[in-house]
Image 1: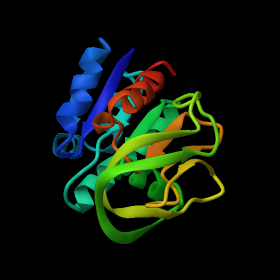
Image 2 (image 1 turned 120 degrees about the horizontal axis):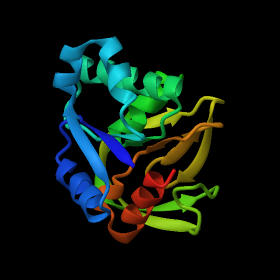
Image 3 (image 1 turned 180 degrees about the horizontal axis):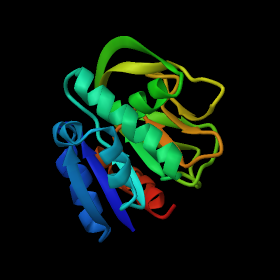
Length: 190
């Protein structure tokens, strides 16, 4: 398997890379500024060379980052590529496909996520402990999505697109120890 990792300048990018290396997963990391310089058609060509995509979190709001990531989400739909959107990556997945976001009080903590529906990523748990660091959340999922996990911090913690292997999280599995690594390992098997 070969993964396309989109660097949205998350402070936890090195943690994603560490897990991908620990799992002996072949990957390439592109930063969104480089992708922006390529143009929309080139994003689609780039996607053809990968089996799946991970969208990292981010630290600051940017129209450029949003545009690039929305194009990647749409490309994953076109080419039926599995996608894991982490924190901001999950938010842009949701926003691109008709959901809404809201500003919330900043959270930076380990949070208990109640698993509402088993999925390929977390098939064996009723709840997991995951690290969160964000001040926006998905406020409303569209009917195109299935809610997989919820917490006291955020109703829509973990979700997927109906009938497609596109997953979004509000949390950071790459910073969440064994549960997070297990989740990422399962994503890479899709």
